[in-house]
Amino acid sequence: MALISIIEDFHPLNNAKLLDRAAELKPSLHHRIVEPVGGFQLKERYSPEKEDIVLHKVKHLAMGRGENLCLDFGTHLVGYVTLSLNYTGSHPDAPAFLKLKFAECLDELSENSGEYNGWISRSWIQEEYIHVDVIPSIVKLPRRYAFRYLKITMMDTSPKYKLIVRHAECMTETSANYRTLQQAEIADPQLRKIDEVGVRTLANCMQDVFEDGPKRDQRLWMGDLRLQALVNSATFRHMNLVKRCLYLFGGSRFPDGRVSACIFTKPSVQADDTWLFDYSLFYTVTLEEYLEETGDGEALDDLYDVAQQQVEIALRGLAEGHLVSEDQAKNAFIDWADALDRRAAAQAVLICAVRYARRLARRRNDWSQMNYLAGEEKLLKEAALRHFWDPEKRCFVSGGQISIASQVWMVLADVLPPEEAEELMGRAEEFLQEVPMLTPYMHHYYLMALLRSGHRKEAEQHLREYWGSMIGSGADTFREAWDPEHPDASPYGGAVVNSCCHAWSCTPSWIIRTQLKES
Image (cartoon, rainbow, N blue to C red; front, side):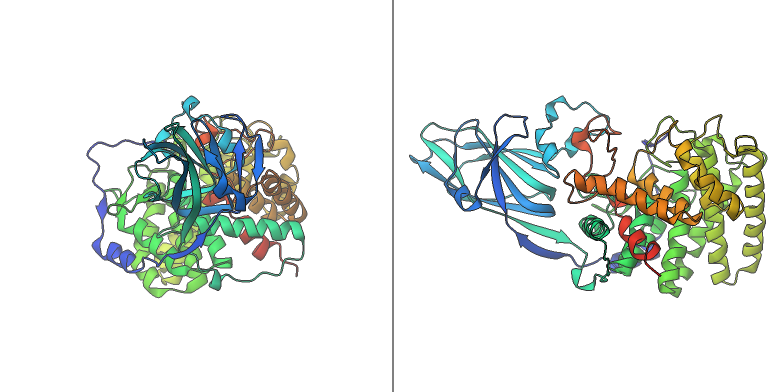
């Protein structure tokens, strides 16, 4: 699966009009100062065992060589840290050599980053080594961090003095405005807590774009945007931020017009040279869902052709028999599961995208396009049933594999009649074994398939168990990858680079507020 793409001499197709409009929509950022609520020491270098320290005594804790202080800021934050340092003993006669380790969750403090050897760059690990030459001093760290805990280790100093952290604070940063947060009456305490954590997850990913994660990768990904836009519509309703992101994706694309999987915005806007089949189609879906919320005629006029083009490119690339080709399927994300055969799911994603493109055409009174897409949707569904449906096993089979992803996406694509879809998802437990779901991203679509097929009770129970288990593990925000039985599992080769605050994990807030509301 081509999740990393390197195209030499890549020159994206830029549309100045769309990028200028995106620049006009750049949001203001909101800030507040947050101080630690407590502190502790780690007894061993990579052990989570701790000794609690009452916060008002922290300023009296002096660190000598090899000693540490861990500050707890109370909840997950995104922002800039300032430290006020002093000393005890004789006047400092040598610099303080410090290691700063920022951690989103407590178990991250116990990770030995020196042992990490995964395929995602270790440069994302939030560790810094600094020298402080003059003490007392105020140290303002220039980088933005995503964290709850800060571990300060005195790597070396002079025996003449010890270091004291007199004060620490974080200036948080987000474009989410809590004054616009839609209030939700959620009586159930567990669902209320899940909603609270989902909202915080979204808010900490809302910067000048909807970032996928404030720790890593800190940029705009199309698959994440679709889900963030849904949650935003039921929470902060920062619709101009959704619009800005749609204009960014439309404004910088592959030379042939394809929407890139993600967008860089610094130092200037540029499409990444990574393309994912399903992500490009979600552009069409996200635009239609945005228009359903806003009725924004300007966005429809400016972005209609871009959205239709994504579907047309996919349709032109089909294999014989109106089937998604192997090349298209291998470039579909679907989930972080290398063993997953993606062809059935990719076929279903295309069917969904065609349905949304048809709705866009109806908005534009583009009857020719609407009729064409209706015909294509019919042919794609017929091909899906002919090629992937096994009448004996009564489920969808992709490349000889029975996976929950294939069943979920075919249900979301309405390939089966409602009563058959209900029966299929009623057997969902059968399909979870061969290729398990690995991310909250896939778990979201699993919930949507359960809800679409009439299994509301099962959907709510799964939401409680899966996202509730993250909260039970101590999560302040929802994680990028989560297996309750293997909390340290990572698709990257090491949990130290996992994101503990990730955009695609915030969807319970939308589901609770819109899909599970009591009638």
